[in-house]
Length: 181
Image 1 (tube, rainbow, N blue to C red):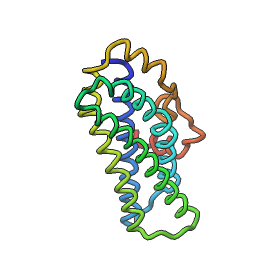
Image 2 (cartoon, rainbow, N blue to C red):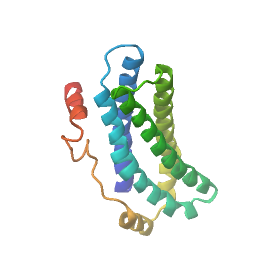
Image 3 (cartoon, rainbow, N blue to C red):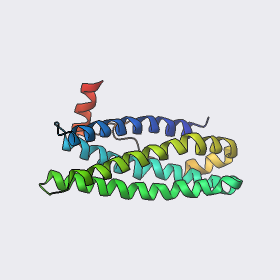
């Protein structure tokens, strides 16, 4: 397996941890228990800073190179790249809703729940589609020269939580993760 695919697998495991944590926080909030809005907002900021700005662009570079080689599965590459745009929009929308509530805005719990559950469900479906269909296809169709092209085009951003910690920007998240681990 190419090291970039290994990196993406690792990213997906980390994103699952983030989604699990967000699910737990959302469950607490919707049940009327204590919920940490700073943490929820930081989780969404992480998704924007890393998933939307580094992880998805790397995948898009792979999908673009693989698309002409994918035959009948070329539409899968297009669908995943379109999902990246939709997920980025959902992330911003959900983060803005959380920030609005944190700053005293009013929003029905049910509406926030729909946004949160939709965001988490679509993220999980997207990760599963990539893991089960796209990544095996990439392994099958991409040759060494293709990987070299992808490496040249790919963004080089370290994960600000799991690889190269930014403990100032994601202070609440680090404090929470250090308690859990």
